[in-house]
Amino acid sequence: MTEQARGYRTQTMIDFETAFKTPPATASGIILPFNTNSVVCTQTLNDPGTITGTRNPVSPLHGNKTVDGELALPLGYRSSGYLFKGLFGAPTTTAVEGSEGLYQHVFKIGDNQPSMIIQKAFLDIGKYFKYSGCKISSLKLPFGSDSEAILTAGIMGATEVIGESTYDASAKIVTLDRAEQFQASVEENDTGVVSLIKTGEINIDAGLDGEQYCVGDEGTRGDIPESILNIKGTMSILFKGTTYIEKAKNGTKAKFKLLYTKGTHSLSLLFPEIIYEQSSPAIQGKAGVLCDCNWRAFYESDTNKSAVIATLINDVASY
Image 1 (cartoon, rainbow, N blue to C red):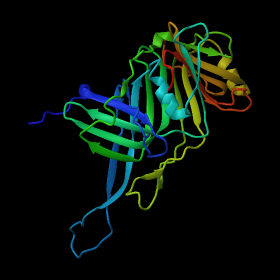
Image 2: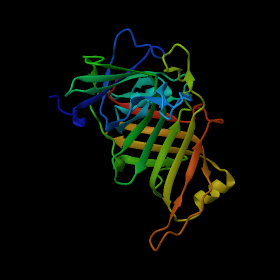
Image 3: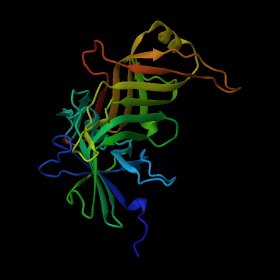
Image 4: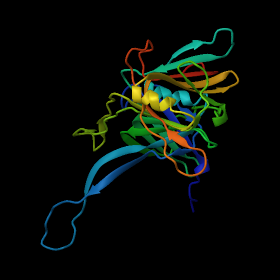
């Protein structure tokens, strides 16, 4: 008798498509370290309005298919680049001058977003679920506190195929080079580290349209077009004065950077132009007072011409 599949005996593999729902001529699978993978295919059953003369229900109707879920990765100096590529497109990569084997990868917002293949492998029962036409619909990164640093990608896809063999038997395994919360720092306006922030979160929404169902596609998405990104940040800061409140009231533009560093490797998210959202501190008890400090990122005049720039320095030659 086949035993129940175990979560620890699973793998998550991705590959980038040449076009939407079109696999590359040669598979180049990438096995990522991950915490959870909730990408699934569902097809709803809808109630028909048919009357047959009795109170018995008639057979339901099959609705459209959806491939949706989240892929949560431990924040890594190597692995994060594949999610950045899925959201922004391929980076500009250069060798770090004077450091043999180190590369800098700079990701900016591109006009087109690549699609991917995502495979869930249940190794102990020999079943493989392959999803095509997948795009990253959102990216979330909480920072601060004592928790594990997790980068979570919302996924929106088109089709599912269940098989008994893997997509790519010679896939590349990405070794985890973990980023931890104590390695993080926040900089504002290039004036040094800000030490008021207790916790925060960055949320990037790709604005994907998942309602493009076409006749002849068997109820699957015919395309998942991207739109304008929506970029938000939230922070809980120690209330030591009204500096941030005044910035919000005055609509003062600022620059925000979240940086993780481990030896020669680093990961940063730079938002060259942000505006803070006005919020006053609440008194919740006898202990230290905190203030919510939220912000929105945008592009107006910065020379980078991108509302967010993700930069990795690591030993990966290319993404």
